[in-house]
Image 1: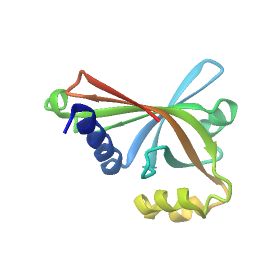
Image 2 (image 1 turned 180 degrees about the vertical axis):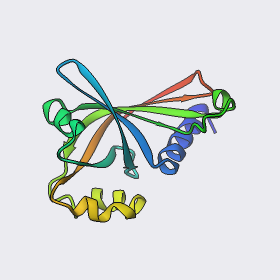
Image 3 (image 1 turned 135 degrees about the vertical axis):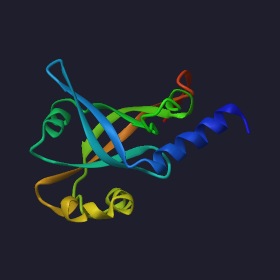
Length: 148
């Protein structure tokens, strides 16, 4: 298996095994980072998360839909410098209409079944990130980029 294939497998494993990501948004030149539960589509073209509509991240996405997400495998130990993997995902975010149904809600709730009431709430939004690029970093310095 080639290096690109190995990196693709590592990316898929990371996206499937991790449940939380750091979402980066911005508004009026001010960056904002938030922790979100996420799920990735099988084809890796989309990431999905849910958020209350009253949050800064939601307002920031409405103002400018360009976002980045960081997903990593760190354990906060010294071994992370050699063993942890991290991926930065860039893309554009949009709110899913009729959030309680459809394929995006299905794969999000398959990973986060405990959030089903929250996702169904009228005060919550299901956000889809249409992925532009994945930038995978392994062994603290090896970088492989995937354009979607």
